[in-house]
Length: 548
Image (cartoon, rainbow, N blue to C red; front, top):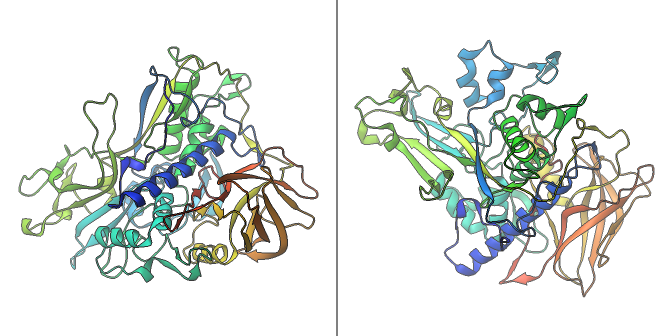
């Protein structure tokens, strides 16, 4: 048996040449992942019925993984599945819509198969429809032919963490990945600085990471931006899927029925139903794995797999695989059983000297007009680690449903100026509210931080509320309230005792007129110390862990 000492960065990527900075990054990232795992063990027990807890999911930092544990790859198609699922009669438009956005409204509920009032295709945002944990941006020449495509599956939380360690490293990576002319001011939220470090706030929807067109002065795909494409959502989905489900005494086992019953994602996607069904089957219905427990395999990430180049045909016979470049990440290790490619960022580009473009290459007899034709030839994947005879016995639960009397819980804490600025950016970019990841709020021993926004799970701020840090060494006082993007938030001051020890804190909410939960909110508040001139801040999943 062994306990993991630290969660590794995705694909074990190391972005700092300075060992001290890389050690800070490694520690901060491991802290992030630990929070997502701990939160996923609980689930949203405040707002939803039968959504948690999840005893068959485990944290490898605190639970031994036996040597008999097995790794199980979970692959899915990278092309956005909901496009074809919702519009089966519009196949001639699928590739174009996957590149440029869906122009038709949604009129069908795929879970109930009922007709609904027309709504814009969700998720919204500059690349919202690319919701399979893979996004891309396309560069075209003056003849509108594709000259290159950049693909990314890097989670936004990693880049927020990287920024907290050193914004200059983030800038350098943008200059390398997208455009050497990228400037620091391009990546910042205007007029918003962290009141502790003085560093400007990072804008994940900046001009070099927005949309699907790579232009001379804007565009690119550095990391994921679609609101469901977060690592926190991946953990919540996998953990929720470990719960066996039953309706009228019959087990729910199909991919589509599970995702609709358990509410851990969207039907029609390739990712959510596939991940959920695979984890559910392994944990609950594999005869060779009785009483199984599961977790996501370290290093956790969303990973592109090598494309299937067999249907490609180039004008001069050059293997199309020569035009695919893994920029960040690595390929599978053949000596490791069941290993997967861990590609984070890749490009498909024909060298100028070839005399032809990407659009002159054929896939299955058709010229590449849209980058999504390439996406249709590769898969995404993650890995689960599973072991048997854990002593965990689960009874099947009914389907998840909204709690008619939700209990009070804190959903987010952030500097009030930053909170307002990020919500403005979301509105400007037509993103879902709270889709930009929110950092765990840091405070030093003996420090008081003022003008802090605190958001309830209800999105309002009723009078008479109180908040208690369960560990007892941090105090939260309400000083006012404010309306931001249609949500009411409390404005609070937070004081840490001089002897407060570094580490995460949990928060209990007591709100008049709402049931009080014994389950504290995890990962929103962190007591930190100063290390090498840097603050050890970490990220948390956004407002609602389940995929939108």
